[in-house]
Length: 489
Image (cartoon, rainbow, N blue to C red; front, side, top):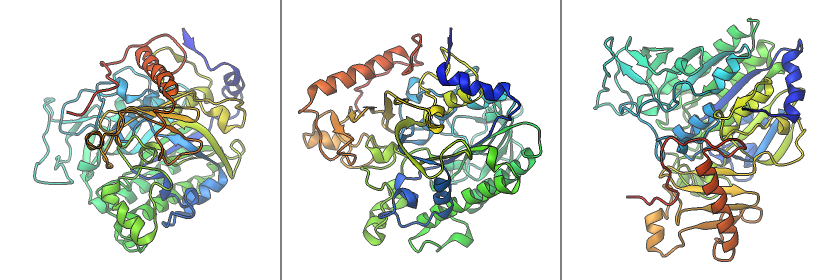
């Protein structure tokens, strides 16, 4: 049975049937960029200049209640590509590494965004960080191990084969790196092609994105460019020309350079005459990583709040861990200069692309993906996401429904103090309930005052876990057993 996006899908399906060319799609994913890093989202407490993203926001729609599928890298990226929460896989906490054999995180045969778009004639490319498991192997298929004495470079020889590259999961072209611990090892399609100095990687990705846009703009087919940048994640390494630009240290210099690279990509769309028919999405995989950013110092010395008015940072269950910048521009379709308070999640991309191209998802595709196309086009009359499930680095759960947010952890659920064990020692409750309409900073735990809300939200979460999906449809199977109340060892 097909899971059809009926009402609005019929309208948008006309795009496919008509002579109008489907839009190009550019999805820019920053790495560890906090909600408060973009100045237009945090005008009073954001001190880093981000003119290019600010301009993009003025030309499109800003979502103020958008969330990543997790508060850390790998699981969010899985959700973006598959429209499924990563905690349904065997990866139920943490992130994957390049030197451990996890097996494929995206199962062979599972529908991905690029695979879906290829069905509608798109050329698909990823330029940047994958972090969804691939292996370096020799000609006999044996794993090639990295050098142990290099902090940021795996030392994988040029020419080494790559098993499980993004080109095996729907992409026509790939150039980039696996994740930040081996950022200098550059892969093209299924081979290691170079080692690049750390402080050159961000500009390298931008240059290749500009090149790709130029090439594909001349082709008679739409393109999908997934551009997962390396910044401002560690290693914090702005290029020489950006050092000192912010006046607030290397981290803020790196954020400014990130904005600059985004500007280069947007300018390439203009220069090649395709900006008017390109859907651009700018976002982040999770919140700011407080330690590397030296967030406390930024706040104290410069009054710069990377999480804006939100509590917590990367890895946490609090909003600073997973509420993200989310800006969408599509000239002539998305209202410029608009702000939308709709609750959405980055798992939405698959269903949105399906509706955009007039395709249907089967029952075992995009189980946690809800199309935001009606929202973008101003056609929605009701909330698209009834719920969004949040997940932390340590594998803790929370669920948002309407104004209520329930967290199944006593502390941050992640790295920010109090961590869960510390919170237990302080005698804090095992669950947290917040009214997000009046307490977006999550300062007052209402769990004891509203046990009926706690019970209701927990029942919804348990149902979505058991059903293998959060969207309507037939029950699906999770890849592993899920424990909602599992405590850290």
